[in-house]
Amino acid sequence: MSMTTRLSCLTSASLLITLSLLMAPGLALGQRYEPAAEDLALVAPILADRVDQDPERVVYVATLPGPDGDGSAASPRRDLITVVATATAGTAIHLAPGVYDMSVIRDEFGHSDSAIFTGEDGESRRPIVLRTDPELYDPGAGAVATLDFNYENDPSWRKSAFIARNKFWVFERFEMRRVESRGFWVDVNAHDNTFRELHLHHANTDGRNNEGLILMAASRGGIDNVVIGCHLHDVGNIDTATDVLIDRGFVNGGCFYSETRFTYDSGEPAGGNDASRAEWEAVVNPPDGDVYLIGNEVHDCHYGLGLKTTSRGPYYFLSNHIYDTDVGIFSPFSGNTVRNNVLRGTVITLGRSSSDSPRATFFKMTGNGSFSEVSYNTIIDGNLSVRAGWGTTAHHNLIVDSSHPFAVSRNQFYWWDDGAWPGIRGEFLIGDLDASNPFYDLVPGYMKETPGEFVRMRLTDNCYTAEPVIAATDFVQPMADITGMTFDEDYVVLTAAERAALFVDEAGGDYRRVSDDGFICGSRIGASTPLPMPDGGMPDGGMPDGGGPDASGPDGGVTPPGVDGGAGAPPASEGCGCATGQAPLSGSNALLLMLIGAVLGRRGRGRRRP
Figure 1: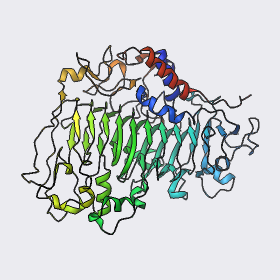
Figure 2 (figure 1 turned 90 degrees about the horizontal axis):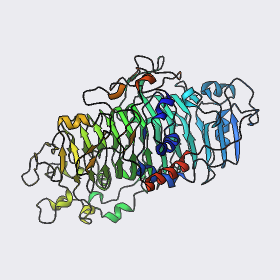
Figure 3 (figure 1 turned 120 degrees about the vertical axis):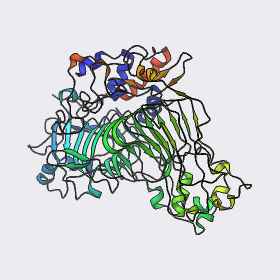
Figure 4 (figure 1 turned 180 degrees about the vertical axis):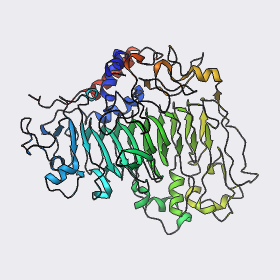
């Protein structure tokens, strides 16, 4: 499908958003979606003081061979490693399109490593920007700057290719590929950064040491980092001679992964589980949070968007398209917003299942998916799994082609490992216990102080193709055993005909369930290519599931046969496959979209190239 064909299908109102957010490298080969309006509105004020600011100075960089010039358009720099390390607030680094062989740059300029390190902070309204020269950037024609590490960035900080150590940087509209272990390492103090419309792919890792294309290690308070409109894929054990993904690696890696410091760096009070809430809070570091993952296409990795250790959020997973992953979205953080995502053949999971120490138990009782909102997601051939989730609400989700659409289980905690604690399962949580329960004395002290915190999760107004049931666990106690109960909130079970009708690309068939009374469930993103039908086919000439135009290969072309998803792009004559069932924009909504587009869509105005 050509760029021209795809854009011709869009309404003028949505074109502003699509141009600003979705024209990422590889767009002509991948599947892009227009993020929901409410998700764009959430990040617009955060990005307003960062993206598309007029730079105070522009440093031009070009590929080798050639002399390392003064950074002007006529005499560009070649030593990209030094340029990034010495950039200061208000600087825009404009990369000429082409392949930047980081191993050659390392050797040519005498660096000990091919990895790139930031060196200075930007500022609000004076960010430091690294991007393909906006005057030359044309991803549809392959005019993109590509940082190629040849899997040779081993000596760098924890085997990372690009170490972002500073604040107020904008990384946008370039490609980075073939990295060893990690692409971006976002260091502990790297707050207020933006990763926009990047194409990041091929990270060679066994997934055992917190690895991925973006490793979020920033912590100690509100982070306000935004990953928007990026294409992330191919993480795991890779045949580095052919770039073929052999497998997706182990559980500590993914396309996006976190390494929170909240648990690692915090202490433990002398009283352990008997300590009060105040005693615990006194030794706990400020939590991670305020990370926004919006409008990204993610595939071929263990975790699509995954967080590691239990912590407190908030974390925002918004309008992402995730497929061909072992776990699509995974968060043991509290305060998640999981909204408007589309997942194919993968799952959304909140919470971890076990604890092995008083400290781990405390964090998992005060985080672990709790007080989250999971809403308006579409999951095809997968499920929602909640292992903790007190105070969480799941509503208006559409889950189709799943025999077990919703799974709820409870954690095994350190303080009942001796078998004395009977456990409690399903919707019912520790907050349902009071002093009248015979097991109340076994509850940790910090939990008894906050009886209103550990409350039930709620499900309401979801659509399934099978009834949601509570998963059985490995113990039975009459007062806690609710195995076999269905959830007590409203839900809709779709018939086979209703399910199939959701995936027909015609008026009203915009991949969500709308009933006669206006009841809606499922993602509200705008589809620019059709989703797969339940039988694996695609309407309007699209590609079948698993054979779509998923990724561009390291040479900039279509991924070769043998690489996951490497079937090539469909010809433009097969039609645009646009969703046509979206309701017309009201005047206020159209204005909102135009304002967001104006904030996010302006290209930075550096000096024009001669």
